[in-house]
Each structure stands twice: as structure tokens, then as C-alpha cells.
Image (cartoon, rainbow, N blue to C red; front, side, top):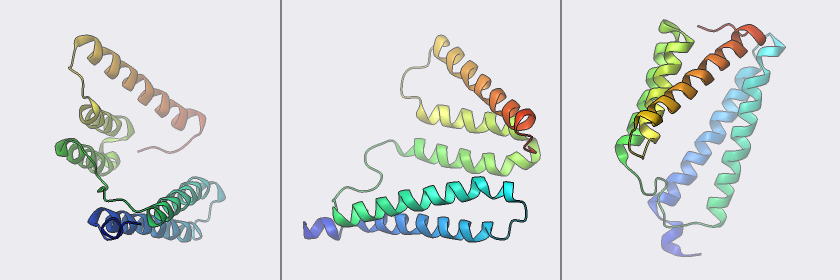
Length: 151
């Protein structure tokens, strides 16, 4: 093990973030103990368990085999900022505008952040058409098949 790799900022940051995600999973599992409806526990418990497992594996792997690389790697900073701010905006907007309009906000921000190729009319029609279809499909599944109350 390289001493500079074990003490690098990327190494420490990755270990701290992994530990924070394990803690978030444990807090979520603890929170689900207060849920009275058994059906409402299933999804958060499943996600929390997966989060704990994945973050623990990340922590252990990064601890066993440290690297000098930072956690972000190479990339364009504005895409990361756009994606995170879009997700926050979607969470804030969903109770006020509803599931589908908030989904459009999330999809638009994610698409713009992820699109590295040139925009063409066929790309726009394909991506927006398939995105709209998927959002309506999910809305229909949750609202009418699974009977999940949506905002």
C-alpha cells in the first residue's frame, strides 16, 4: 500500500462518504420501525438494506485498496451541478405541482446533464418521446395498478 494513496484527500473523502451512507441506511431502517402499515415499510427497508450493503462494500474496498484518485474523476462540473440541483428542485416541486410535472423537471435536467452528443431533431424526438412514454407508464403503474397515492 502506497502511503500517499492511503492519506490522499480522495481516499479520506470516499471513506467518509461511504460511512455517511451506511449511517443514512441505518437511520432509515430505524425510522421504519415506527411505521404502522406493514406495506409502507417494504420499499424503504429494501432500499436502506441495499444502501448499507453497497456503502459497506465501497468502504471496505476503498480501505483495503486505497488509490490516489479523487472521487469525482474527470468530467464537466456544470453537468454535476445541474443534475444535483435538478433533483433538489424536483423534490421541492413535487408536492406542489404533482408527480408528472416534477418528473418532467427531473427528466429534462438529467437529459441535459447526460447529453454529450450534438442535439439533432431525431435525438430530441427520440429522447423526449421515450422519456414522456416512460413517465406516463410509471404514473399509470403507480396510480392505477399499485394504487400508490401520488401528489
